[in-house]
Length: 273
Image (tube, rainbow, N blue to C red; front, side, top):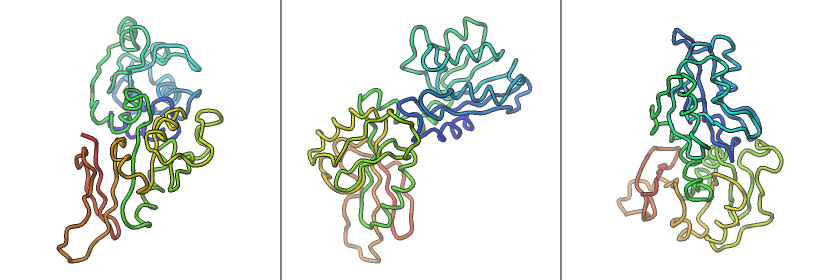
């Protein structure tokens, strides 16, 4: 499952509005014979890509997948059907799909005689799936806010994080795609021109784009962003040997989830309580 979680992360920044899912296929002897992830909407899902890599070796084997296989016909056939047709004997699932229609893919797999185990490393799978799930619950994009002193530090963070976010809001409210060109035409409606200065109004605009995750950069509108952000990343520059108290590392309502040292700054990550 941990391999499937790592594989699933390759879909961050391109799979939305669909979830970033990973799948690993084991043969009868427990050897890895295929793996796959969902790249973008309208293309094959993780299970189908993994089964294609495994070929006939999937028969009698196990599919390990980070999200419950879908059970409905959309732009692609249902994944539970592909797993059954491939002769998979067992399916291991991390997170159940809240958007599953009818009885759900897991129930239909069981009806077909496939052994199903669910809830395996679910909390770890949420490291990748969490923003997508929270976006569904909140009916708006999951927002990561990066701020702090030192342009070089923030620029470095943004260069890395934009690859796993659908949209990026830069200083002045200019909106760009995260992984430019990775979603295909018509998936998101990127606003033209800068967003307004009123944070909740801007959030409404972002919610209408269809994006699942948004990276917001800089200190503009700090008070408002602290109230709506889901995750914050603060780059605190080194202050030398002075014992003077510096600025608070996190806004109210967040807890520390990670503290690491960068080049010339401390990286502080907070999750909303």
